[in-house]
Image (cartoon, rainbow, N blue to C red):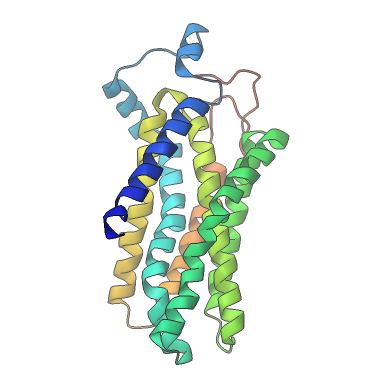
Length: 255
């Protein structure tokens, strides 16, 4: 019934919160209590943690990258129906059904991105996650250009859409797989900065769609944003881990 409509997501959210509270760790090294007892992490105030996180360059690079991932998704989910309807002369119901496939990729793509992130980390440490991030962003940008390629049939266009949606969503899973390693002393602040990048990217790209006089220009800008975010990846340097260009892996990362 209608009265259960708001209750079901509430129950699901509370259940998920209880599950993660009892089955997850605070950091890659374990719970904060255990890490502090081992002398690997100093106790800091919320203000100190905020200051440390806000001046962390790595956090702002991930801010841009998450903006290119979630920002594009937010805008695509709101504009795809109109784009497909106008481009292929479809009814709104048909276009909406095809556009919904973009969001449906979240059913597996984000989780798959997190899974791949853990697998490459096991083999190559944090450097593997960085390479995965860079590759997924490059692929996403390339596929966006393929999506708007003139002469594509409806079937090919939808295929491009599904694959680049999956790459962007896998990148989000990988992005949040990296956050706990950036600086465990201020993980909450860094996570907040990165998450805000998605909303900022969505607002920025939606304004491009709103002000552009060309149907294709916003898609080119989204692709170039992905390429820009990708080339920033080698500048991520995390203490205790080897990056793409520099750094060395340590048995116990410096906290």
